Image (tube, rainbow, N blue to C red):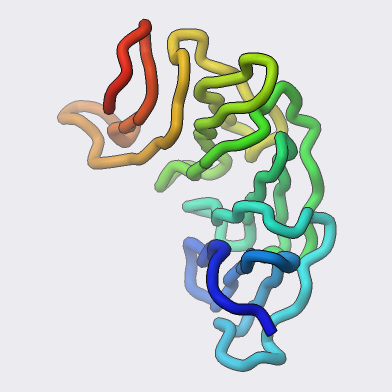
Length: 166
C-alpha cells in the first residue's frame, strides 16, 4: 500500500474531482470525492512523483510538473498531456492564480544556471521567464491591492541581487 507524502489537488468547483500524487508511486484521480478505495483510478500521461495542482477556475483542469516538464489535464485528472513548454527549471514549485483560468507562476531552479520565476497565462502551454528575478523558491497570493484586480503576489527569492521575501 501507499503511505504518506506526496501532494493533492482539489477541484476549484463542486463535483468531487481530486488528483493525488503520493510519494513513491503514480498519480491518481477521482471524480467521486475519493470516499472509497475503488473511487481512485491511475491517471495516465503524467510521470510518477509529479507535483499536482488544480486550476483555480476550471473545475476539470489540473496541472502537473516534474523534472522540467509541465503537464495539463482537462478531464478532471484522468489523463494528462505534456505541454510544449521549454526552458523550465528541473526543480520547482508552482501555483495557479485564484480567479484566473490558466494563469500559473512557477518558481524554480535547475542545472546550467536556470533559476528564477516563470509565468504562463495559457494553462502551461508556454512560459515566460521574468528577467528581473534572479532566483525564486516559492510564490503565494493575497488580496489585491486597493484599485487593483490582480491578486497581490509574494515571492521568496532574490531580486536585483537582494535575497528576501518580496
